[in-house]
Length: 140
Figure 1: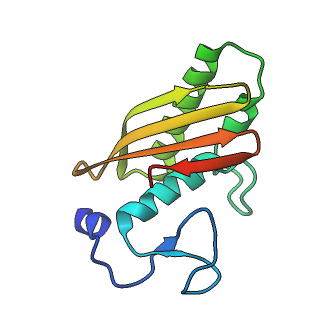
Figure 2: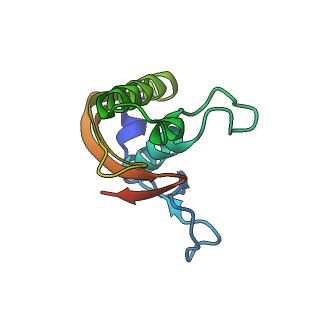
């Protein structure tokens, strides 16, 4: 399994990059590097609302619900940290979350950084924002 996960010399498309955009390959920009696709998969998992995915209503998180809550900042951080770790553990067992950092720079905005290991061999970091109903990716 480890060799399959970390093989970055794949010569075929393995997924879609987010956000979805046109590319020279067609309507969607494909991913050919496994590590980049894992980043897209993590971001997609966290940003999918639980119940949103057809035939997989248990997939996703409740992070968007927290963005608008009127609870203290530390409680929001703790809940988001738990959601991220639980969902990645449930759906992506080859990922071990080392650390999450949740910042709330302004109301209705959350900046999330996830540091993780892929198959206990490769260290990666992903940072992205959730702004109300939208998100902005960084560090990809």
